[in-house]
Length: 124
Image 1 (spheres, one colour):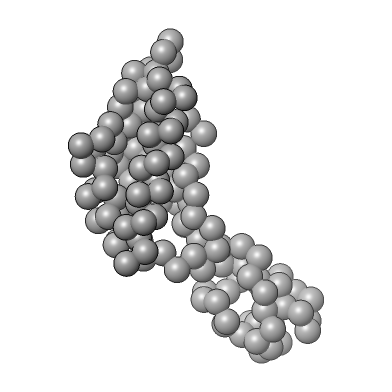
Image 2 (cartoon, rainbow, N blue to C red):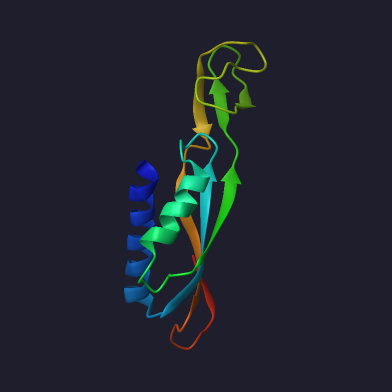
């Protein structure tokens, strides 16, 4: 289950940000998760809760903003929506579609308390 290692990576980002910015509590972590990222969202939620136990993000909400899959079709030159890697082009039916969006997973914001001079705040 690679979602556990992804959750550990998120914990590292949270801890690094806390050290750099001095906040003491994380209320929410906001992620972008692409439709083509191979991330099982429910498994990630479970792993996130487990990994954040005993940290400043224990009990934090995990907000997920989905990013649709996009691809560029080599034969017809169209940018198209795709639901899965290796799906055919919905315009011409070709399987020569290169993913151009929706493969990412990244922390885009933290809702935190206890930052010097500005609590609560958004860390982006």
